[in-house]
Image (cartoon, rainbow, N blue to C red; front, side, top):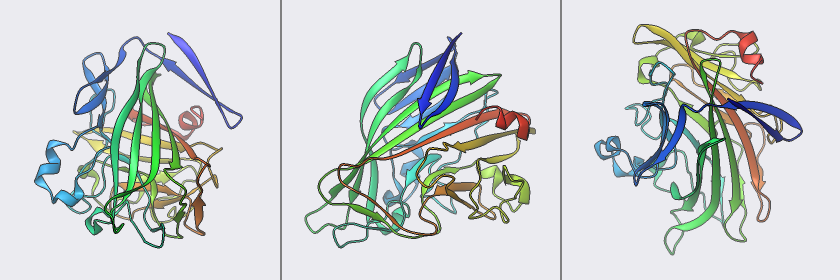
Length: 302
């Protein structure tokens, strides 16, 4: 087993590569597998579930399912209550672009779209994962869909102490000379939708490093957030750790009081602008586990 050292914003993040892990690409998706077991699936084309929903909710460029080492599916997709939430995904909500207001989160509006464009690299050697390109488009432009942002995702997966560790680096850049304003709003950004079995009001379904539950922790600025519970009669969960070098770190987090989702939202208190020629960079680490994961164990992964 080889140890990889990732240096970003002056912080060392350590990960390990396992010979069991491999990354496979098809026309429809990119999969990371641990032997024959699925770790995650990234969607290049709409899933079969998309066809069961209004076409407005169809989406590519996200991860689902995301599984624990024992095979439990942590994420959800096309949930009846929020069909615009798709596993592990990135979407801005209230925006301003060239005098218009495209929205990339609430797809029912039909005003904005995020799509997979192409695969940049597949890694299955020392590193395991993939690099892909997404495009954000303004669907309200008078001449038809207008490109707004290009986003690259660099996803790396490792197996550390019996848990999956996913490092995701997003880089967003304006396609042309027009800036995108991210307006002040209470949600939007890097999000995760959990398994439908976790659709409830259990307070500690989602907790922060400060010990705050989904109500007390809403719109706080934690170092990490954990979502966990029982699936198929056994405990499991996921921890999301935003990098301390991210814009406005620690970012605010929207924790829903009853839906199994949360999102890191840097615009909760004030807007900002993604300017042409200046990339908006963000990094997140996810640890997917079976059983329980203590605060000390989470802190050891930072």
